[in-house]
Image 1 (cartoon, rainbow, N blue to C red):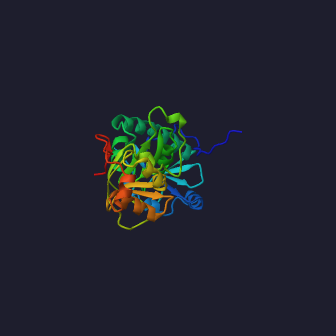
Image 2 (cartoon, rainbow, N blue to C red):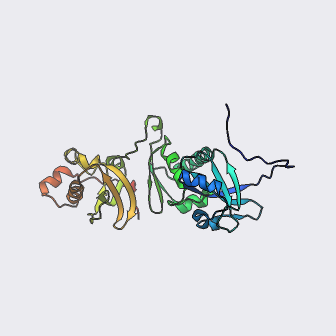
Length: 295
């Protein structure tokens, strides 16, 4: 049986179809979504909060918000004409499938553009760039972004996506290795970033507010084999977040003791016995022309 949902008009001469542009996606609990559908004249805070996004454009197109329930497949397009209730509405059947398809198409463009502009395995794009370049209103507090994020993370070309204050950082799988990589929801490990030269970086335990020490430089030649063995727990810690924070370029780590992260940073700064420093740290670790900084 083929089943769907629709709104039927009686004895209309033609279908009153309008072009519409979705400016924001609002997700509400299913119980509230059902109440909203059954009381379209009721004032709604999510409409009041998005009045600037709903209007009729110069060419007659409707700029709308899309309201969806957290479990419902369907959605309702709303253009309120400046009111705080759903003055003009249209049902969008299978709205979440529609959003997923559009986000997949957008992800193709984002990956192509980022890899063309950034040959390295790390690429950053701000929310303002996403909005300007692709014509969609993306920000970390807006529902549309959270339909894009899982699609990006599910692509075989991407190891992981880190959400920062001003945008996203994509960690790509090396070209040619995509089919052999499976997304790890727990994040990549610190050691996997060391093919870059990390400069002026600060390592912190996830959720810590303690002041970290600055690591002037860290790359895959910084440590000796003894050093890699001694500090393997830190090197294999999972990256929770990479961002420009209060102290500068910061990386939050999980899966390792906080004291070990601090001791690792202190050791690289020379705060350890001299014999241990030369046992663990190479003196020829600089890699010219292949660095990653967040200045």
